[in-house]
Image (cartoon, rainbow, N blue to C red; front, side, top):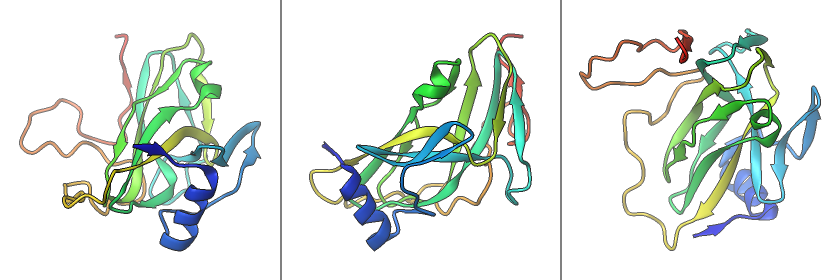
Length: 177
């Protein structure tokens, strides 16, 4: 697999609509988002309506959030979600989600604060980096799973009859208790 360059990412966003809204490299609240040399930094959102402007992420706490951007993945591209170093240096981990070829929707992000201080996360700030890889050929099995056409805002795990104790997207969990 090949990691896509800025110009390839931009072309896929403009011509195919791979993610929108698309932004060139931009700085907001001291943190960058948008297109980079070999990836795209997505922005955070906390609810379906986009009205919640900030959330506090306490030490040891886990929460679900969403991206401002909506994805429409081509059948020959896979995205990998990575930590953004600005936040990682403060203790925030973004679980490394795979964005499958053929998947469409708003991406749910899983965030944990491993640092010693509470962190105020503001809507629209850059939160994670996506690296896009090109498959050796388009897949004949594009994503058709339960998260296809995922709605805006954080979406809790769809458990398929598993009995999990926390299946609500609006619940924050302290992992150190």
